[in-house]
Image (tube, rainbow, N blue to C red):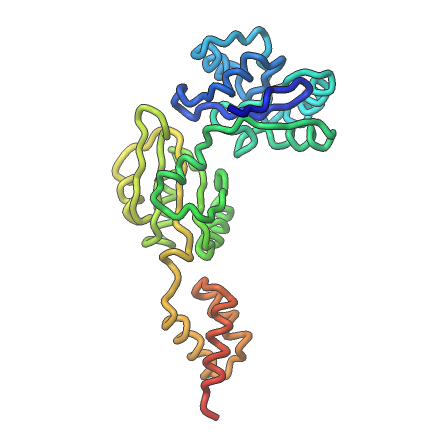
Length: 287
């Protein structure tokens, strides 16, 4: 087994279980045992993890959260420069992915110090892998905005986004979110992944409209990841629909450029392919 040993004078990003405590890797366990300092979101939560695996915290657990991240970066840099092995964890999953940590990593890298990782659980990839949707290309949106304007802006982008979309939502807002999406993208396929790896793990699969109806009839609890099909998979209009829209505009004397822009805006289709269709229609016109 070819393993890179943990080094002193290094920051290690360590993934921790997102639910099932058995998902902590042997390497992650060894790092938590040997670290000089372990920075975490909530020391109480991390003590539970340490206790479950028989690890002594020995006053090594230090809080790192969104309100002290930049200030804590200075402490981390000083420790690494002194030759300490510093570990960064989050409450669950991989630090810095919709959790504190990214700013610390950026500052340590900027200081020219060594940063490495013991990868492992992450809700994003876990949810994507069980969704049944395309995993070739995807985009992670984190938690979407709470304000109506922010949400509408996200939905409008998603209407045209060809990649699979992954985002987090709270149990208090998931039903309203799916109802809002059902009004815009009712036939788009989705998966709502709840309590992944935990006792009450559940995956709801179907169209957005179907899932919205299911959620409306029940109480929703737990941590949730939503995986939404991209526009290029099932929502792209058939070619004849695009051709008809272009033909109608060209017949009215609209320029190729403007016709393409209007159709791309209206139907959410790819600009390059639409332009090729428009040029073909123009070339076939009878003088």
